[in-house]
Image (cartoon, rainbow, N blue to C red; front, side, top):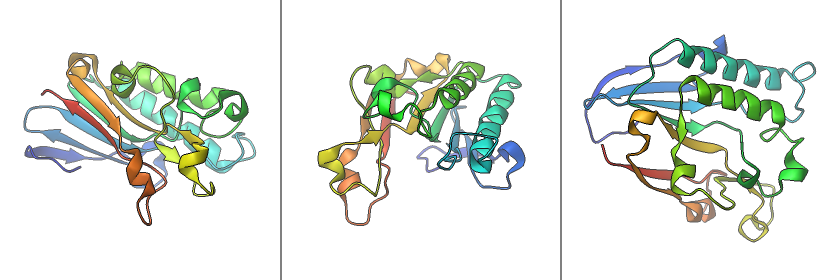
Length: 193
């Protein structure tokens, strides 16, 4: 977490006891807590009985839900690669991808439970409510920009007490086209805090 404001406290949780470095949090001088998550991708098969990676993903999301259910979540922002595109307009083809890991009904349901547990508000969609919106494009796509077969896997959420302070959001799509880029594009949200 990079901050212009001094960081008062840092901490992390080992969600689902995976032993992975998938969460880091910081409390800023102004009292805002920022949680940064990297939810497991989940492998290729959306079946927790036959795919250990998918099972770990669901366990991770369950632990996130329990964590936020058990704390008083206020003045907080949650960011990160949540590896789930929850809305039909968060994927290039809702029908074709509804059985593909990252857009399955079970993942969307688990993510909604996490969102409800902290009363999180999707501030990116608050600023950009309509239309296709992606933050990830596969390396496998020959011309990723032309094909535009993306997914919105990266998210910025805020608690209700500060969500209305989100002034603008932007997916920096052009960064995906840089030399040796990530398959994810950065998301920027401007808050008045």
